[in-house]
Length: 193
Ligand code: SAM
Image: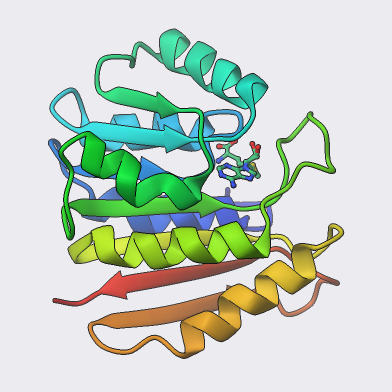
């Protein structure tokens, strides 16, 4: 990372790595290639539980392949559903409110896939509201936002405006590269109690 610009995905990992522990329950709300899902498995270990959502079968297949290559399968549940079903899906897996230590959102499209299939404001906002109810005390929601693709700017604005309205026990932070045009930006929500 030393001689390369810091990416929003690096920021998510840097904040999550020190606060996750073996045995934690975590969610990847946008599995994509599976890199974040594998990262979460590394953080929570064999005793943890990782739930990963994606609406595209191709993304979940790539995630599955990457998990198998990395030796993680037992602690992961891949869910072929939109992340706005996160609360009922976790409830069905006996995971209740305030039980999830981290929830990652890496919005936008599947890298290498159809760029017209992207996360959408309406379902993203439902998912984020659900994520608040699942988040444990001391937990984090990370959100990578990509304003550079069609619909991405509107989605980023909606997420940022919503974050500005959050009340205690949530604290929302926004990180943005200042000297690039339409840079991806990073939002992180803490639950403080
Ligand atoms: N975290 C991923 C990784 O490590 O490679 C990258 C995620 S990629 C930028 C965004 C993903 O979100 C795509 O794979 C896309 O199919 C997925 N997606 C789009 N809408 C979704 C939704 N409503 N629910 C869950 N996933 C969605």
